[in-house]
Structure formats: C-alpha cells, structure tokens
Image 1: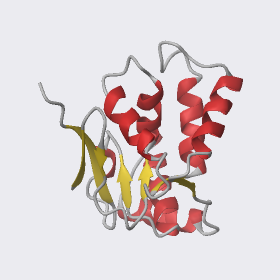
Image 2 (image 1 turned 60 degrees about the horizontal axis):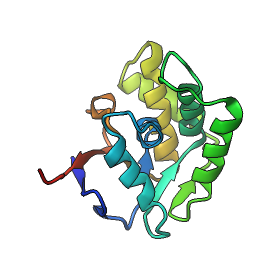
Image 3 (image 1 turned 90 degrees about the vertical axis):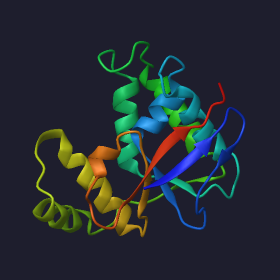
Image 4 (image 1 turned 180 degrees about the horizontal axis):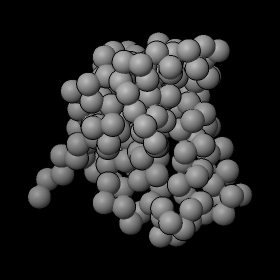
Length: 166
C-alpha cells in the first residue's frame, strides 16, 4: 500500500508520474467541514490546484458524490442539487484533476471482475469503479475505504494518512 503523508499546509504525493483516482469519500470529506477526515481530504483536494498533481475522477465518482451530498440520510447539512452541481463544476475546473471517460468496454470489464471477485448489493459499484479505472490505464485509487479494494489484482490503494504534529 502506498500512502500520502500530509500536514496542515503541504502534501507529498507519491509517484505523481501516474494518475491517482480520488474516491467519492475523499471528495465528500473535503466538502464536509464536520467530517473527521475533512482536513486530510481537503489537503488532498487542494493539491489539485497544482497542474502536476496527477489526480483524476470518473463520472461514477461524481454521480456518487452528488447522491451523497444531497441526501439528508448521508450528510448532516445536505446541499441542494444546484449547489452540488456547482461544487462538481468547480472540482472539474481544478488544473491538477482530470476527468476520465467511461470506457466503451466497461460492462465487459466489470463482468470479468465480478467473475473473479464476487460481490453483491452496493459492493458491485466498487468493481465498476475498478473496471473504469483499469479501462483508462489507472491503477491507483486514493480512498478512506481501502478494504473495499483490498485483494483486487492490479489496483494500488492509497490511504490518506495525516501526519499532524501534536
């Protein structure tokens, strides 16, 4: 597992010569100032102000983000649909964050992954995300939910780690 070490004002990205996908939870925590992981998530998202950050998202991540931040069951202070769309627009304008397309062979890749890593219920969406990543040549994902991707061959999980001085 590769880790990002961050302080309150700086972030060190490991191996930025290749893209790292930001999982939905990183975006949600970066927005939610009350979340326990807000500071590190915000630092990671802020790193995408640098054109060389090498960060990326895919349509599924943005759809999941929209669903979470507009749901009163998922967040304490949900956004309106217009507010959530504005946040997504602003995220997509960050110079160090790329939007990757949905591969044409997504369903074939996803079904192959389901054959190798059986999942049911909501967990199938993690494999769909992996299929999208791999279809775009991305092998690294930054997530607070590293267990969701554990054991999947070809995926490097980057768990954000705060190195705050006490």
